[in-house]
Length: 460
Ligand SMILES: Cc1cc2nc3c(=O)[nH]c(=O)nc-3n(C[C@H](O)[C@H](O)[C@H](O)COP(=O)(O)OP(=O)(O)OC[C@H]3O[C@@H](n4cnc5c(N)ncnc54)[C@H](O)[C@@H]3O)c2cc1C
Image (cartoon, rainbow, N blue to C red):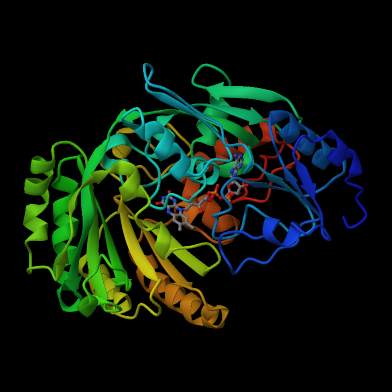
């Protein structure tokens, strides 16, 4: 790979081609997870679709490994690779909101904060994740869980069409009408099928939300988890709340006496009427009472970006995840045990609800198969100091190993490290064979394999 001459690609790009030795190389090869340290042979900073087509054709014709990068947030570092060519979409930042049709067309280099900002000007929002610096590309293609899941569904449930550069260099727009098999696979199947250059999303009228954290002491955690387990599935779909074990950050919004305390909490995000939201969440928020309750009305983009400062790029991250159908009392006891051992200030465990609108889509209707799961659990060991890499990794692994027997089997692809084909199959369950068949049709040579890889089905 070291001998590949990238000059022909360089001259055909409108954007930049960055190679080792270029003063921009070190910054360009960095991804969000500071644990990832890969050295590609070249990074094509694509300015437009033509650049993406040129890079795909070059990679295919030269047998070059290709990685595709949107926001660079993937914990396993799947937006970058050693030796190969990175198709970096980050300069492609166009967004067009159509307020009449209530849609947002988003180029693949955008992060969610860009979308929130653009849509908010029209009183609209599209469901995404909980940190606004996450890339639109990877989050969407894996599924997309966040504050609006119960009300508006997964991000993919709001994906109306996607522009895609395929492995043969051709360009298609996949939707329910055109290339419906590709459209099906893109909604949860990750970056396996081509480079998506633009996404068309449905947007929802939403300006202000009623949200924020309620925190309890750890000795109340088992009771809070039991109440949460019973409360949330019955709550109106306007009410979303994810559960967390956390260390209270020394941030001004928290009183000083709570700083650096290990606690548990629920982070609320309610749509609809604020008085109704207050009344609906009151039964849980008055339990205990909590040590801290900081819930109020704020613009959706402000809430979406509220946690960004806690998680700047470059920290060490190690993730373990599972889908969860039930939170039994035995599982709750194990959560409390490991939650009390959160090893560093940034480390955390989250349980994200997957129900409401997300449950109204069948397991086979999109590639995302776990429509019957109630929660996505993710244990994340995080710390700025590389010396703590083993500590955070061991905690996340031990926590996950104890809880895994109580899980539904697979995990959300966007919360996984590189964990092997068995885990990927467990995640797609009954959809795996169909995904492999779609992969064979659109990428028979597995050109796009730096991802949670689905191998092309063998020819009959
Ligand atoms: C701090 C943090 C918070 C998060 N919170 C949430 C959350 O609330 N909800 C949630 O659902 N997820 C969340 N995630 C997980 C997130 O969805 C994944 O990390 C996702 O892979 C990030 O997408 P990206 O575009 O930034 O990543 P990248 O590293 O750029 O890409 C990730 C993968 O997607 C592929 N890909 C990206 N863009 C394209 C494209 N345009 N065409 C083809 N393939 C592409 C890449 O090849 C790679 O395999 C979070 C991650 C972090 C780090």
